[in-house]
Image (cartoon, rainbow, N blue to C red; front, side, top):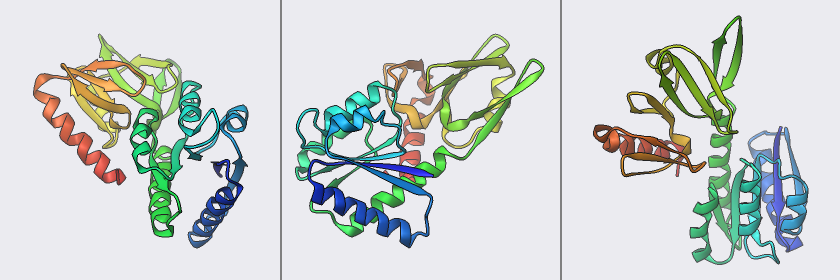
Length: 237
């Protein structure tokens, strides 16, 4: 079940977004989805914001779409954000809240379809790929999309997750690296980083979306940049 939220203070635009969304889902034979409509940012915030995808009008009464997005991110919301606006220059602020795309009003059907194609690919990546960690006499299934970075200290591996928790267990970094997919890059002899969470590289450090920094070897900085560009291209960014 894919959950969508549409937040726009113009009921006509909210209906138009809902119509285009329904048409797209019907064309792609996707029946397992739900849509909730909110006419202001406050109502969306009060709902908890636990949606897979949120379409946000930028120009609304306070909190406007951008402020609503900031508050959602501060509360730990990791849903995909798509901004809807009449002003093209406002979309540059979207990077601050990790929006995945933006749509200009009036809506263009072809552009909307491109955005939805990108959204479905992203959702598919988020829901595929797990790793089983052996811990003592038991095991734990960890989605690869939840892992921000991995580090080795002594004989232990530490998996740092996007919710702030850390899983530790005994193994070698080389063994873990063989089990991971292309989104992970070895930026340092003691670190593997998920490119999904990389926001830049500066002064020998990888900048992560949560504000953390991990080291990157001087000889691997250029490779990291190339790997990140390839990853973004594969995602259609």
